[in-house]
Amino acid sequence: MAWTGKCPGCGEWNTLVETSATATGAGGPARKRSGVAAGRPVALREVSAERVSRLATGIGELDRVLGGGIVPGSLILLGGSPGIGKSTITGMALANLQAAGAETLYVSGEESASQVRLRAERLGPAALEVRALAETSLETILATIEAEKPAVVVIDSIQTLHRAELNGAPGSVGQVREAANALAEAAKRLDVAMILVGHVTKEGSLAGPRVLEHLVDCVLQFDGEKERTYRTLRAIKNRFGATSEVGVFEMRSGGLTEVVDPSARFVEEATGAVGSVVLTSMEGTRPVLVEVQALVNPSELEIPRRVVNGIDRNRLSMILAVLARHGGVGLGTSDVFVNVIGGVRIDEPGGDLAVALAVASAQRNQPAGGTGSKPLACFGELGLTGDLRYVGHADRRVAEANKFGLDPVIGPPGGDSLPGLAPCATVRQALRAAFPDERGPVAV
Ligand SMILES: Nc1ncnc2c1ncn2[C@@H]1O[C@H](COP(=O)(O)OP(=O)(O)O)[C@@H](O)[C@H]1O
Ligand SMILES: [Mg+2]
Figure 1 (cartoon, rainbow, N blue to C red):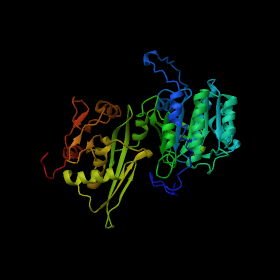
Figure 2 (figure 1 turned 180 degrees about the vertical axis):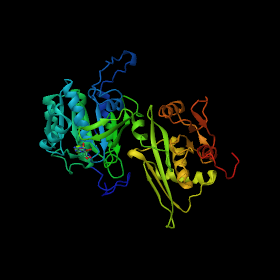
Figure 3 (figure 1 turned 45 degrees about the vertical axis):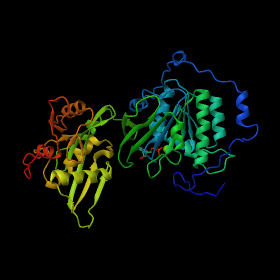
Figure 4 (figure 1 turned 90 degrees about the vertical axis):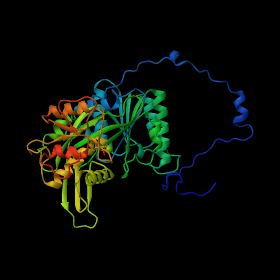
Protein backbone atom coordinates (compact mmCIF):
# COMPACT_ATOMS: atom_id res chain seq x y z
CA MET A 1 0.00 0.00 0.00
CA ALA A 2 1.36 3.41 -0.88
CA TRP A 3 0.05 6.94 -1.05
CA THR A 4 -0.78 7.80 -4.60
CA GLY A 5 -2.51 10.96 -5.74
CA LYS A 6 -1.90 10.67 -9.42
CA CYS A 7 -3.00 7.67 -11.43
CA PRO A 8 0.08 5.89 -12.78
CA GLY A 9 -2.04 4.58 -15.66
CA CYS A 10 -3.55 7.72 -17.15
CA GLY A 11 -1.53 10.42 -15.41
CA GLU A 12 -4.62 12.20 -14.12
CA TRP A 13 -5.03 13.53 -10.59
CA ASN A 14 -7.94 12.61 -8.35
CA THR A 15 -9.08 9.71 -10.44
CA LEU A 16 -8.07 6.95 -8.06
CA VAL A 17 -10.87 5.36 -6.07
CA GLU A 18 -10.78 3.00 -3.17
CA THR A 19 -12.22 -0.43 -3.83
CA SER A 20 -12.37 -3.23 -1.35
CA ALA A 21 -11.00 -6.56 -2.45
CA THR A 22 -12.78 -9.68 -1.26
CA ALA A 23 -10.90 -11.45 1.51
CA THR A 24 -8.89 -14.36 0.29
CA GLY A 25 -6.42 -16.66 2.06
CA ALA A 26 -7.27 -19.81 3.97
CA GLY A 27 -10.76 -20.91 3.11
CA GLY A 28 -10.62 -18.55 0.10
CA PRO A 29 -11.29 -19.24 -3.57
CA ALA A 30 -9.10 -22.34 -3.85
CA ARG A 31 -11.05 -24.27 -1.27
CA LYS A 32 -14.40 -22.96 -2.33
CA ARG A 33 -13.90 -23.88 -5.95
CA SER A 34 -14.14 -27.61 -5.28
CA GLY A 35 -17.60 -27.20 -3.78
CA VAL A 36 -19.05 -25.19 -6.68
CA ALA A 37 -21.09 -26.95 -9.33
CA ALA A 38 -19.75 -26.42 -12.86
CA GLY A 39 -21.81 -24.50 -15.39
CA ARG A 40 -23.22 -26.24 -18.47
CA PRO A 41 -22.24 -24.71 -21.81
CA VAL A 42 -24.93 -24.90 -24.50
CA ALA A 43 -24.52 -24.89 -28.28
CA LEU A 44 -25.54 -21.45 -29.50
CA ARG A 45 -28.06 -23.04 -31.86
CA GLU A 46 -29.99 -24.23 -28.85
CA VAL A 47 -29.97 -20.90 -27.07
CA SER A 48 -33.33 -19.23 -27.40
CA ALA A 49 -33.12 -15.71 -28.73
CA GLU A 50 -36.33 -13.81 -28.92
CA ARG A 51 -36.45 -11.17 -31.57
CA VAL A 52 -37.04 -8.07 -29.53
CA SER A 53 -38.86 -5.26 -31.19
CA ARG A 54 -37.09 -1.98 -30.81
CA LEU A 55 -38.67 1.12 -29.38
CA ALA A 56 -38.77 3.79 -32.05
CA THR A 57 -37.98 7.22 -30.66
CA GLY A 58 -39.83 8.80 -33.55
CA ILE A 59 -36.73 10.87 -34.33
CA GLY A 60 -35.63 9.33 -37.61
CA GLU A 61 -32.00 10.41 -37.41
CA LEU A 62 -31.67 9.15 -33.83
CA ASP A 63 -33.29 5.82 -34.63
CA ARG A 64 -30.98 5.37 -37.58
CA VAL A 65 -27.86 6.04 -35.49
CA LEU A 66 -29.13 3.60 -32.86
CA GLY A 67 -29.53 0.94 -35.54
CA GLY A 68 -33.32 1.06 -35.70
CA GLY A 69 -34.49 2.34 -32.32
CA ILE A 70 -33.86 1.62 -28.66
CA VAL A 71 -33.36 -2.02 -27.69
CA PRO A 72 -35.46 -2.74 -24.56
CA GLY A 73 -33.33 -3.11 -21.45
CA SER A 74 -30.27 -1.57 -23.11
CA LEU A 75 -28.02 1.13 -21.72
CA ILE A 76 -27.16 4.10 -23.91
CA LEU A 77 -24.62 6.75 -23.02
CA LEU A 78 -25.20 10.11 -24.72
CA GLY A 79 -22.23 12.45 -24.55
CA GLY A 80 -21.85 16.04 -25.64
CA SER A 81 -20.69 19.43 -24.46
CA PRO A 82 -23.03 21.70 -22.49
CA GLY A 83 -25.70 23.42 -24.55
CA ILE A 84 -25.40 21.06 -27.49
CA GLY A 85 -28.95 19.75 -27.03
CA LYS A 86 -28.72 16.56 -24.97
CA SER A 87 -31.65 17.45 -22.75
CA THR A 88 -33.60 18.59 -25.78
CA ILE A 89 -33.14 15.43 -27.83
CA THR A 90 -33.79 13.08 -24.91
CA GLY A 91 -36.87 15.10 -23.97
CA MET A 92 -38.15 14.84 -27.53
CA ALA A 93 -37.47 11.11 -27.67
CA LEU A 94 -39.37 10.49 -24.42
CA ALA A 95 -42.27 12.62 -25.64
CA ASN A 96 -42.60 10.49 -28.78
CA LEU A 97 -42.22 7.23 -26.85
CA GLN A 98 -44.83 8.31 -24.31
CA ALA A 99 -47.21 9.32 -27.10
CA ALA A 100 -46.69 5.88 -28.67
CA GLY A 101 -47.79 4.21 -25.46
CA ALA A 102 -44.47 3.42 -23.73
CA GLU A 103 -44.09 4.49 -20.10
CA THR A 104 -41.26 6.97 -19.71
CA LEU A 105 -39.39 8.71 -16.91
CA TYR A 106 -37.12 11.72 -17.14
CA VAL A 107 -34.77 12.04 -14.17
CA SER A 108 -33.16 15.45 -13.97
CA GLY A 109 -30.27 15.98 -11.62
CA GLU A 110 -29.30 19.29 -13.16
CA GLU A 111 -32.48 21.22 -13.56
CA SER A 112 -35.52 21.65 -11.35
CA ALA A 113 -38.82 20.13 -12.47
CA SER A 114 -40.04 23.59 -13.45
CA GLN A 115 -37.01 24.17 -15.67
CA VAL A 116 -37.66 20.81 -17.31
CA ARG A 117 -41.25 21.86 -17.84
CA LEU A 118 -40.20 25.08 -19.55
CA ARG A 119 -38.17 23.12 -22.06
CA ALA A 120 -41.04 20.69 -22.57
CA GLU A 121 -43.34 23.61 -23.38
CA ARG A 122 -40.97 24.61 -26.12
CA LEU A 123 -40.97 21.05 -27.47
CA GLY A 124 -44.73 20.77 -27.71
CA PRO A 125 -47.72 19.23 -25.96
CA ALA A 126 -46.51 15.61 -26.12
CA ALA A 127 -43.42 16.51 -24.08
CA LEU A 128 -45.65 17.65 -21.22
CA GLU A 129 -46.99 14.10 -20.82
CA VAL A 130 -43.54 12.75 -19.87
CA ARG A 131 -43.19 12.14 -16.17
CA ALA A 132 -40.24 13.87 -14.56
CA LEU A 133 -38.32 13.45 -11.33
CA ALA A 134 -35.85 16.06 -10.13
CA GLU A 135 -33.52 13.97 -8.01
CA THR A 136 -29.83 13.25 -7.48
CA SER A 137 -29.94 10.47 -4.89
CA LEU A 138 -29.12 7.18 -6.56
CA GLU A 139 -31.10 5.19 -3.98
CA THR A 140 -34.26 7.26 -4.56
CA ILE A 141 -33.90 7.01 -8.34
CA LEU A 142 -33.45 3.23 -8.21
CA ALA A 143 -36.44 2.84 -5.92
CA THR A 144 -38.54 4.97 -8.27
CA ILE A 145 -37.54 2.95 -11.32
CA GLU A 146 -38.29 -0.24 -9.39
CA ALA A 147 -41.74 1.03 -8.43
CA GLU A 148 -42.71 2.58 -11.74
CA LYS A 149 -41.06 0.10 -14.15
CA PRO A 150 -41.04 2.50 -17.11
CA ALA A 151 -39.94 1.24 -20.52
CA VAL A 152 -37.42 4.03 -21.03
CA VAL A 153 -35.64 6.22 -18.50
CA VAL A 154 -33.42 9.22 -19.16
CA ILE A 155 -30.86 10.12 -16.51
CA ASP A 156 -29.75 13.73 -17.07
CA SER A 157 -26.95 13.59 -16.16
CA ILE A 158 -25.00 10.65 -14.81
CA GLN A 159 -22.46 13.07 -13.31
CA THR A 160 -25.01 14.56 -10.93
CA LEU A 161 -25.96 11.32 -9.17
CA HIS A 162 -24.52 10.24 -5.85
CA ARG A 163 -24.90 7.42 -3.38
CA ALA A 164 -25.01 8.69 0.17
CA GLU A 165 -22.68 6.15 1.79
CA LEU A 166 -19.97 6.55 -0.80
CA ASN A 167 -17.19 9.10 -0.42
CA GLY A 168 -16.55 11.55 -3.20
CA ALA A 169 -18.52 14.36 -4.75
CA PRO A 170 -21.07 13.74 -7.51
CA GLY A 171 -19.20 13.42 -10.79
CA SER A 172 -16.13 11.80 -9.23
CA VAL A 173 -15.04 8.55 -10.83
CA GLY A 174 -16.16 6.48 -7.86
CA GLN A 175 -19.65 7.99 -7.77
CA VAL A 176 -20.17 7.84 -11.51
CA ARG A 177 -19.05 4.25 -11.69
CA GLU A 178 -21.21 3.25 -8.77
CA ALA A 179 -24.26 4.98 -10.26
CA ALA A 180 -23.71 3.49 -13.70
CA ASN A 181 -23.20 0.00 -12.31
CA ALA A 182 -26.34 0.15 -10.21
CA LEU A 183 -28.37 1.54 -13.10
CA ALA A 184 -26.99 -1.09 -15.50
CA GLU A 185 -27.99 -3.82 -13.11
CA ALA A 186 -31.50 -2.38 -12.76
CA ALA A 187 -31.82 -1.95 -16.53
CA LYS A 188 -31.10 -5.61 -17.21
CA ARG A 189 -33.14 -6.94 -14.30
CA LEU A 190 -36.25 -4.83 -14.93
CA ASP A 191 -35.87 -4.68 -18.73
CA VAL A 192 -35.84 -0.90 -18.63
CA ALA A 193 -33.92 0.90 -21.37
CA MET A 194 -31.88 3.80 -20.06
CA ILE A 195 -30.26 6.77 -21.70
CA LEU A 196 -27.50 8.16 -19.51
CA VAL A 197 -26.57 11.71 -20.40
CA GLY A 198 -22.89 12.48 -19.84
CA HIS A 199 -20.88 15.67 -20.12
CA VAL A 200 -17.83 15.86 -22.22
CA THR A 201 -14.63 17.43 -21.00
CA LYS A 202 -12.74 20.18 -22.79
CA GLU A 203 -10.49 17.52 -24.30
CA GLY A 204 -13.55 15.97 -25.89
CA SER A 205 -13.71 12.67 -24.05
CA LEU A 206 -16.70 11.63 -22.03
CA ALA A 207 -15.88 13.20 -18.68
CA GLY A 208 -13.83 11.08 -16.34
CA PRO A 209 -15.57 7.80 -16.59
CA ARG A 210 -14.05 5.87 -19.44
CA VAL A 211 -15.30 2.97 -17.36
CA LEU A 212 -18.77 3.84 -18.57
CA GLU A 213 -17.93 3.17 -22.16
CA HIS A 214 -17.59 -0.56 -21.78
CA LEU A 215 -20.39 -0.82 -19.27
CA VAL A 216 -23.01 0.48 -21.69
CA ASP A 217 -24.35 -1.08 -24.90
CA CYS A 218 -24.17 2.03 -26.97
CA VAL A 219 -22.19 5.27 -26.82
CA LEU A 220 -23.60 8.21 -28.75
CA GLN A 221 -21.70 11.42 -29.25
CA PHE A 222 -23.42 14.70 -29.94
CA ASP A 223 -21.14 17.16 -31.74
CA GLY A 224 -21.29 20.60 -33.20
CA GLU A 225 -20.61 24.11 -32.13
CA LYS A 226 -22.97 25.74 -29.73
CA GLU A 227 -23.12 28.95 -31.71
CA ARG A 228 -23.99 27.14 -34.91
CA THR A 229 -27.30 25.49 -35.53
CA TYR A 230 -26.07 22.19 -37.00
CA ARG A 231 -25.39 19.20 -34.78
CA THR A 232 -24.26 15.71 -35.65
CA LEU A 233 -24.98 12.57 -33.72
CA ARG A 234 -22.80 9.50 -34.13
CA ALA A 235 -22.50 6.14 -32.47
CA ILE A 236 -18.97 5.52 -31.18
CA LYS A 237 -19.94 2.11 -29.94
CA ASN A 238 -23.05 0.08 -30.63
CA ARG A 239 -23.71 -3.51 -29.64
CA PHE A 240 -26.88 -3.53 -31.70
CA GLY A 241 -25.95 -1.71 -34.87
CA ALA A 242 -23.30 -0.09 -37.04
CA THR A 243 -21.14 2.72 -35.72
CA SER A 244 -20.81 4.48 -39.02
CA GLU A 245 -24.20 6.18 -39.21
CA VAL A 246 -24.46 9.89 -38.57
CA GLY A 247 -27.59 11.88 -37.84
CA VAL A 248 -27.72 15.58 -38.67
CA PHE A 249 -29.89 17.99 -36.72
CA GLU A 250 -30.58 21.67 -36.62
CA MET A 251 -31.48 23.53 -33.39
CA ARG A 252 -34.68 25.50 -33.83
CA SER A 253 -37.06 27.15 -31.41
CA GLY A 254 -39.28 24.06 -31.43
CA GLY A 255 -36.38 21.75 -30.57
CA LEU A 256 -33.99 19.80 -32.75
CA THR A 257 -35.15 19.28 -36.31
CA GLU A 258 -33.81 16.44 -38.41
CA VAL A 259 -31.95 17.47 -41.50
CA VAL A 260 -33.06 14.79 -43.90
CA ASP A 261 -31.12 16.08 -46.89
CA PRO A 262 -27.91 17.50 -45.41
CA SER A 263 -26.26 17.94 -48.80
CA ALA A 264 -28.84 20.47 -49.90
CA ARG A 265 -28.37 22.43 -46.68
CA PHE A 266 -24.63 22.42 -46.66
CA VAL A 267 -24.06 23.39 -50.27
CA GLU A 268 -27.01 25.62 -50.98
CA GLU A 269 -24.86 28.69 -50.34
CA ALA A 270 -21.73 27.40 -52.03
CA THR A 271 -21.09 29.60 -55.04
CA GLY A 272 -17.77 28.56 -56.44
CA ALA A 273 -15.99 31.56 -54.98
CA VAL A 274 -12.23 31.68 -54.61
CA GLY A 275 -11.10 29.34 -51.84
CA SER A 276 -14.31 27.32 -51.78
CA VAL A 277 -14.64 23.67 -52.77
CA VAL A 278 -17.36 21.08 -52.19
CA LEU A 279 -16.32 17.81 -50.62
CA THR A 280 -18.38 14.76 -51.40
CA SER A 281 -17.93 13.10 -48.06
CA MET A 282 -19.36 9.88 -46.64
CA GLU A 283 -21.12 9.96 -43.30
CA GLY A 284 -21.63 6.30 -42.59
CA THR A 285 -23.56 4.87 -45.52
CA ARG A 286 -24.80 8.23 -46.67
CA PRO A 287 -23.01 10.60 -49.01
CA VAL A 288 -23.06 14.20 -47.81
CA LEU A 289 -21.81 17.29 -49.60
CA VAL A 290 -20.01 19.81 -47.41
CA GLU A 291 -18.35 23.08 -48.31
CA VAL A 292 -14.69 23.50 -47.43
CA GLN A 293 -13.28 27.03 -47.45
CA ALA A 294 -9.74 28.29 -47.25
CA LEU A 295 -8.13 31.68 -46.88
CA VAL A 296 -4.46 32.31 -47.57
CA ASN A 297 -2.79 35.56 -46.53
CA PRO A 298 0.81 36.75 -46.37
CA SER A 299 1.92 36.22 -42.80
CA GLU A 300 3.47 38.78 -40.52
CA LEU A 301 4.56 36.13 -38.09
CA GLU A 302 7.77 34.19 -38.07
CA ILE A 303 5.79 30.99 -37.78
CA PRO A 304 2.73 31.45 -40.01
CA ARG A 305 -0.67 30.66 -38.65
CA ARG A 306 -2.51 27.42 -39.39
CA VAL A 307 -6.07 27.80 -38.19
CA VAL A 308 -8.58 25.00 -38.72
CA ASN A 309 -12.24 24.47 -38.04
CA GLY A 310 -13.76 21.09 -38.73
CA ILE A 311 -10.58 19.28 -39.75
CA ASP A 312 -7.57 18.03 -37.88
CA ARG A 313 -4.69 20.51 -37.61
CA ASN A 314 -2.04 17.85 -38.21
CA ARG A 315 -3.92 16.70 -41.26
CA LEU A 316 -3.71 20.25 -42.63
CA SER A 317 0.06 20.31 -42.01
CA MET A 318 0.40 17.10 -43.98
CA ILE A 319 -1.75 18.39 -46.83
CA LEU A 320 0.27 21.61 -47.01
CA ALA A 321 3.50 19.62 -47.12
CA VAL A 322 2.19 17.46 -49.97
CA LEU A 323 0.98 20.57 -51.82
CA ALA A 324 4.38 22.20 -51.48
CA ARG A 325 6.43 19.17 -52.41
CA HIS A 326 4.27 17.62 -55.13
CA GLY A 327 1.96 20.40 -56.26
CA GLY A 328 4.29 23.37 -56.40
CA VAL A 329 2.02 25.31 -54.03
CA GLY A 330 4.34 26.91 -51.46
CA LEU A 331 2.74 28.39 -48.37
CA GLY A 332 5.74 28.71 -46.08
CA THR A 333 5.23 32.46 -45.57
CA SER A 334 1.43 32.51 -45.59
CA ASP A 335 -1.19 32.20 -42.92
CA VAL A 336 -3.63 29.43 -43.85
CA PHE A 337 -7.18 29.24 -42.53
CA VAL A 338 -9.43 26.29 -43.32
CA ASN A 339 -13.07 26.12 -42.33
CA VAL A 340 -15.73 23.49 -42.94
CA ILE A 341 -19.05 25.31 -43.29
CA GLY A 342 -21.95 24.66 -40.96
CA GLY A 343 -19.92 23.41 -38.00
CA VAL A 344 -19.44 20.03 -39.67
CA ARG A 345 -16.38 17.91 -38.76
CA ILE A 346 -14.62 15.89 -41.40
CA ASP A 347 -12.85 12.91 -40.01
CA GLU A 348 -12.32 10.76 -43.06
CA PRO A 349 -9.14 10.83 -45.15
CA GLY A 350 -11.28 11.30 -48.25
CA GLY A 351 -11.44 14.99 -47.32
CA ASP A 352 -7.77 15.67 -48.12
CA LEU A 353 -8.18 16.69 -51.73
CA ALA A 354 -10.96 19.18 -50.94
CA VAL A 355 -8.72 20.91 -48.40
CA ALA A 356 -5.81 20.91 -50.86
CA LEU A 357 -7.86 22.39 -53.71
CA ALA A 358 -9.52 25.00 -51.47
CA VAL A 359 -6.09 26.12 -50.25
CA ALA A 360 -4.66 26.11 -53.78
CA SER A 361 -7.61 28.15 -55.02
CA ALA A 362 -7.15 30.69 -52.22
CA GLN A 363 -3.42 30.86 -52.85
CA ARG A 364 -3.73 31.58 -56.56
CA ASN A 365 -6.84 33.75 -56.05
CA GLN A 366 -8.69 31.80 -58.69
CA PRO A 367 -11.92 29.79 -58.30
CA ALA A 368 -11.52 26.03 -58.43
CA GLY A 369 -13.25 24.54 -61.45
CA GLY A 370 -12.48 27.55 -63.59
CA THR A 371 -15.86 29.16 -64.06
CA GLY A 372 -16.65 30.50 -60.60
CA SER A 373 -20.37 30.05 -61.11
CA LYS A 374 -20.63 26.57 -59.62
CA PRO A 375 -18.45 25.07 -56.90
CA LEU A 376 -16.07 22.28 -57.77
CA ALA A 377 -16.78 18.92 -56.14
CA CYS A 378 -14.00 16.50 -55.24
CA PHE A 379 -12.85 13.78 -52.87
CA GLY A 380 -9.80 11.59 -52.30
CA GLU A 381 -7.01 10.92 -49.86
CA LEU A 382 -3.55 12.40 -50.45
CA GLY A 383 -0.57 10.10 -50.16
CA LEU A 384 2.75 11.50 -48.98
CA THR A 385 4.14 10.69 -52.40
CA GLY A 386 1.68 13.07 -54.04
CA ASP A 387 -0.64 10.38 -55.32
CA LEU A 388 -4.39 10.51 -54.97
CA ARG A 389 -5.58 7.44 -53.12
CA TYR A 390 -8.74 5.44 -53.53
CA VAL A 391 -11.43 5.92 -50.88
CA GLY A 392 -14.63 3.94 -50.47
CA HIS A 393 -18.00 4.54 -52.13
CA ALA A 394 -16.71 6.53 -55.11
CA ASP A 395 -19.92 5.78 -57.02
CA ARG A 396 -22.19 7.17 -54.30
CA ARG A 397 -20.05 10.25 -53.82
CA VAL A 398 -20.12 11.05 -57.52
CA ALA A 399 -23.86 10.38 -57.79
CA GLU A 400 -24.61 12.72 -54.88
CA ALA A 401 -22.59 15.57 -56.42
CA ASN A 402 -24.21 15.00 -59.82
CA LYS A 403 -27.61 15.16 -58.17
CA PHE A 404 -26.82 18.75 -57.24
CA GLY A 405 -25.55 19.59 -60.69
CA LEU A 406 -21.88 19.34 -59.80
CA ASP A 407 -20.23 17.58 -62.71
CA PRO A 408 -17.54 16.41 -63.18
CA VAL A 409 -16.22 15.41 -59.77
CA ILE A 410 -12.46 15.23 -59.30
CA GLY A 411 -11.43 12.07 -57.53
CA PRO A 412 -9.00 9.17 -57.54
CA PRO A 413 -9.24 6.67 -60.37
CA GLY A 414 -11.39 3.77 -59.25
CA GLY A 415 -11.87 0.25 -60.52
CA ASP A 416 -14.77 1.09 -62.82
CA SER A 417 -14.96 4.25 -64.80
CA LEU A 418 -17.78 6.47 -63.60
CA PRO A 419 -19.39 8.87 -66.07
CA GLY A 420 -19.43 11.87 -63.71
CA LEU A 421 -15.88 11.38 -62.45
CA ALA A 422 -12.74 13.14 -63.68
CA PRO A 423 -10.16 10.66 -62.43
CA CYS A 424 -6.79 12.03 -61.34
CA ALA A 425 -3.94 9.84 -60.17
CA THR A 426 -1.87 12.56 -58.50
CA VAL A 427 -2.33 15.85 -56.71
CA ARG A 428 -0.59 17.52 -59.66
CA GLN A 429 -3.20 16.13 -62.08
CA ALA A 430 -5.99 17.21 -59.75
CA LEU A 431 -4.59 20.76 -59.66
CA ARG A 432 -4.51 20.81 -63.45
CA ALA A 433 -8.09 19.59 -63.62
CA ALA A 434 -9.23 22.16 -61.05
CA PHE A 435 -7.31 25.07 -62.58
CA PRO A 436 -7.40 24.53 -66.34
CA ASP A 437 -4.82 27.22 -67.09
CA GLU A 438 -2.42 25.61 -64.66
CA ARG A 439 1.09 25.59 -66.10
CA GLY A 440 4.21 25.27 -64.08
CA PRO A 441 6.45 22.22 -63.91
CA VAL A 442 4.78 19.48 -65.93
CA ALA A 443 5.65 15.81 -65.28
CA VAL A 444 2.52 14.03 -64.15
N1 LIG B 1 -36.23 28.97 -27.95
C1 LIG B 1 -35.09 28.47 -28.42
N2 LIG B 1 -34.81 28.53 -29.73
C2 LIG B 1 -33.68 28.02 -30.24
N3 LIG B 1 -32.74 27.43 -29.48
C3 LIG B 1 -32.95 27.36 -28.16
C4 LIG B 1 -34.13 27.86 -27.55
N4 LIG B 1 -34.06 27.62 -26.21
C5 LIG B 1 -32.88 27.00 -26.02
N5 LIG B 1 -32.21 26.84 -27.18
C6 LIG B 1 -30.91 26.20 -27.37
O1 LIG B 1 -30.94 24.91 -26.84
C7 LIG B 1 -29.65 24.60 -26.32
C8 LIG B 1 -29.79 23.95 -24.97
O2 LIG B 1 -30.09 22.65 -25.20
P1 LIG B 1 -30.02 21.56 -24.03
O3 LIG B 1 -30.78 20.41 -24.56
O4 LIG B 1 -30.43 22.15 -22.74
O5 LIG B 1 -28.46 21.25 -24.01
P2 LIG B 1 -27.65 20.27 -23.05
O6 LIG B 1 -28.64 19.46 -22.29
O7 LIG B 1 -26.81 19.47 -24.00
O8 LIG B 1 -26.82 21.15 -22.21
C9 LIG B 1 -28.91 25.88 -26.19
O9 LIG B 1 -27.80 25.84 -27.07
C10 LIG B 1 -29.88 26.94 -26.60
O10 LIG B 1 -29.23 27.87 -27.42
MG1 LIG C 1 -28.97 19.45 -20.22
